[in-house]
Length: 298
Image 1: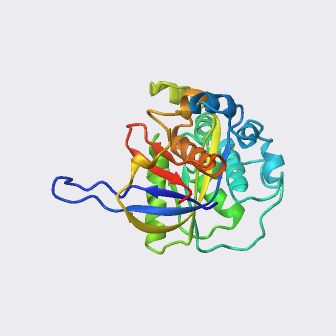
Image 2: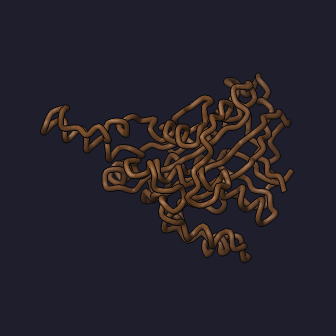
């Protein structure tokens, strides 16, 4: 079964005078959730009112990153990047611990979503500079201070040579990333877009998340979608949905913890699994209740 995501077009500046843009249909070549500690099956079954397949139980057993992507090159990657690499690896359907072929895919773009991915490293380096000066900073820590380390590492690891974007724009980063993916594909800037979101749960990240007063605690996890195509389809038919993921339906943050900037990517990847494995059509909503995407097999 081929899975598609129908994405709303951009909101017009004056909706009373300008008709809304057509929705865009994207083909989903792969999707993966990597949620250490989550127990998806029970919460999903209670929400849906019926049993779900073994795919949901398998999500509750994520292997250590080294077992997923291999040990080489992983040691000095910060935690959110490790999570992202695992999610992308699985979305691509690669065998465990198998490194991708060293071939540059110049038409594959990467959009990363993470607010707090490297804040622990930034805090550690800042303390070191304050106490010892810049000479005390490890050369292995320095690259991880860059806010785009997650997206750039994914690109380098898998050989993705297309546009590379990093979104650190809060809990709506995933839905923004989905729309940017549609624009890149529609404009011909890429033939494939890897949309990946990841957040850690270290002490620094958890404290910053708690300070924002968000209702659910920060939880480590990642998700990825492999997207192609960008065809205008007309208005988004929200009534076609059989299941809702997000406000008004199954809310992943309530059951699995808040993945912050990766929140919508987690919801979208879950929707793809539900569409592919449970043969249903899923409406994914953003935290404000607006439509993020309609995911199904048509």
